[in-house]
Image 1 (cartoon, rainbow, N blue to C red):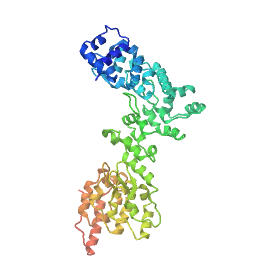
Image 2 (cartoon, helix red, strand yellow):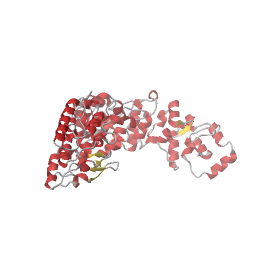
Image 3 (cartoon, rainbow, N blue to C red):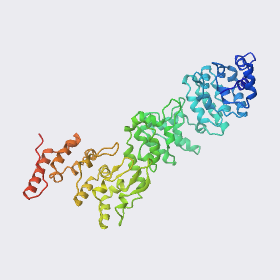
Image 4 (cartoon, rainbow, N blue to C red):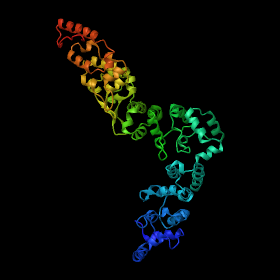
Length: 486
């Protein structure tokens, strides 16, 4: 809460005349003023930013703006911590900030000074771009940035560009077109190279170089250039934005380019960082990002050396939780890894040597953030034929629930096999001839596109033949024959 004594001191510091309304209001109640003055041991931030009287503020007064550097310096000397952000974030009157009043009064040059913003270059940039475009002068801003940077011992990237004759337009064109030869030549002439943070250098509107579709179409070329000098984009680069402008993440999502950011190449070796960025994707936008597929590949790549596919390996190495915890605390098992399924025939051979094999119970064990079963993993990696071979060896059978179950937000096995045109691995007459009711149910839950891949009448005919052979041979278990499709 502001005190009248503090406000009076500030008013006098600004050189206000004794008949100024603010001074009069400060001492209109002599007793209250005296008590406040005597009890006041220090100045406070609210003395400058608080309401004066019933409906006034210092920031309506020309005297304050003309002496703002001196006032801020004086308050700081007296222990009041004031930063430039206070002028932008603290409502002073009717929800307006000091920045709002500065813009209205056309005195932005009084607020944006090295004294006020020293050591806070990034905050100053954010505040500047929060101002309505028609009220700010970009040419003045460039000079101001340099002054503030010099005062705080900070570097301004544009200065380094200027030294080798690079403009912001040159940078934006290179990123947009994916053509870096000329830009690289200029940077190299100054002993420099393209940096990851360069894509965030703002133009006069506060926009970054990834603010257009063409730039995202050529995003892989940008990554190629950054790779040359061991530069890489981090989570904070994708979230960076100036007030009111889109961040690279928001821009990519808005033009259906989220897959460019959430890719194996972008986050190899860094799955947890990718998921930290994914938390910033609005829930309604998450369907645009193939996050589960990418995460599975990243974790598989990261853990490919943990499970050793070698002679003497044990089943427990595949079914037990690995010494790795996903970002959300989920446990990962060897049977969920692409590496294992790509080498599953060799894995089965090594297990046989130790008189072990994978059972249906083993394949039903879940793993990862979506609790995906090894059965689902096998389908995703195109190895479901190996699952069927294993079950044929063990004499076990899949339940319909195995084929229709899905991990959170994922496709089920039938949908995956349909998409991969591999339904023939499970829809085989010999597998269903003794389970005709289950087959009928299976057919009803197949995706339409899956049914189009199969000849129902041919399947039924062949299953009936098998069923009749078993019956005449005295086999048990045949429940009935199936009628052809109407």
